[in-house]
Length: 397
Image (tube, one colour):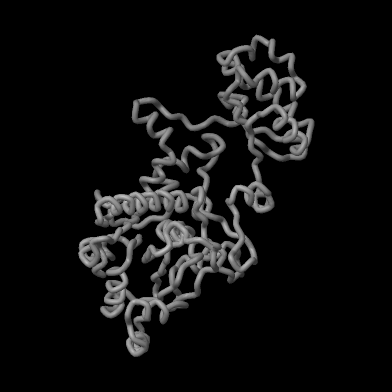
């Protein structure tokens, strides 16, 4: 297999939970060597987050820690910090999401580590950014990305519905993509200047970017109302409907003037083309509720599989409201590369969401156990076998 894009790139993943480590995972998919720093014993707390009560399989951990080598290291111990500093001195990228006061206390802030290696990219991830009264505040994607930025308020069925809870990692994974972009941008700058530097991102910034359309509208002084119930959708042709077998799908028929006639013909209601209530975009908006009622009745006549064939046949953009099980069995997920097999041939994993022509991703390897690569990493960093035993005796590794 040919070298991948980041073969030879050394990354220190000194972060926890999802967003920071997932950025390192994305680098590893393209061949970077990633050393995962985690506390001895239990390791990264994300290991213990199990989606199914009573199960001990680390499903989440396998996703965001594939391809990595684990070094269990007590950073509260002076010897442990010395190990980290030695690793940083020869690394290309250092990723952390430790709270800012913790970094200062441990001596791993940018001012502490960047002088050790002028080519180092120090990637800093926080909940709320690094300036202002809340810079030191901790947060998760549910609190900083989803709730704080207006997404939780806006993404619900209607104004009477309680705010929706986010899924695990729902904000962390997009935020990891933002941090990855910052790292790769800094690597590009390093190619031009020879120097590394500090890049920063946060859950708050990424969440506001995700909610950017509503926020930018408000920034221009316009009110942004909560979305109405689907029965009162402002555009009946960009609404979700239920088929005879109880399945939901959503249409996005935005090129109305070109597609309306073929759409109405395909669903057996071509006479509506000449109905003055629906003849123009303005009239369709004015009579949207009436059109929703008509389409509700039409779509209730057939099962989803039939509607998929019919709508695909006339080029209507739509999406089924799939279950997770259906997503796993969806052939397009594999054809697109969204799902890929583990390198050992057993099972699948969710892959980095982009491709580069001519560049292969490495076959994903299983995530490591806590400290699985202690000896190999330390010996590779220049420690002797005796040094490793001494560090082990001190409880540093």
